[in-house]
Length: 279
Image (cartoon, rainbow, N blue to C red; front, top):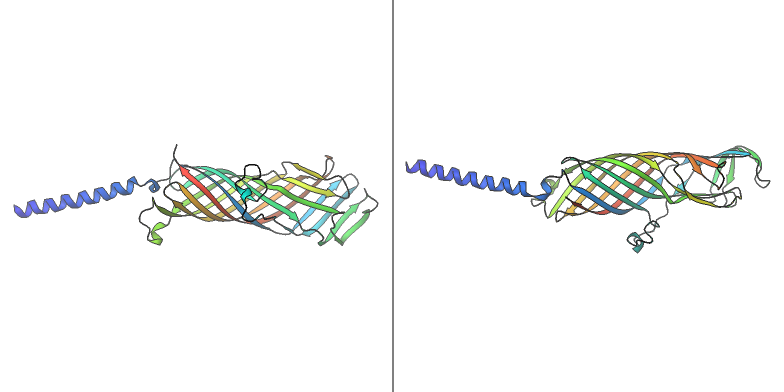
């Protein structure tokens, strides 16, 4: 009888400890994501593939082949958090919701900057008949792209307004982290689609400078990243993102008769700071 009582007591203690540990795990805020909202703000650097850029208008139609371009970094700067100057740097905004523990849906804006490299030599095919200075027929002819001939930028900016679906996995155990409510490490991957709403800054063939927002095309992207969450609600997230952009309707001057088109690939490196919470 004593052995039975002792065994029962040990069993009860074991079950109680196990139950308490289970409750502790279930009580962890970071154990489940479903129903949580998140919001983040950060910065980026980009690289772009070469692209063919076609310009069309009254009395001209030409294509610049394999044009090179670069981004316009601001570096670590107070403008990233200055409300009056937040669009000057290259930035990323994202806001989303977890539909279950592993998947989220988010909307956001990747505010990139695209600057066609000035004074590069590129081959041109087509014709220009609108200005005596530039009038000519081109058959894969090398031309130096001076500012008088063409300046072409999406610097306020190359705005990729997109929706993303992402997967999130807690990998804290790999790093022997037990209390994920203090520190949690997550792996995330996602895909996105969206529209391009650039503010294109250009001077074309000596015409008046144009700098305006215009819905110009669409894009698609994939990403992967690491998320480091502190004290349940605050996180730092680093990502790499690659994508494709196609803009068949870029406004280049103040006239609706003048337009350009281009398509290219981009690669983006991102660091963002955010918060995650339940309402």
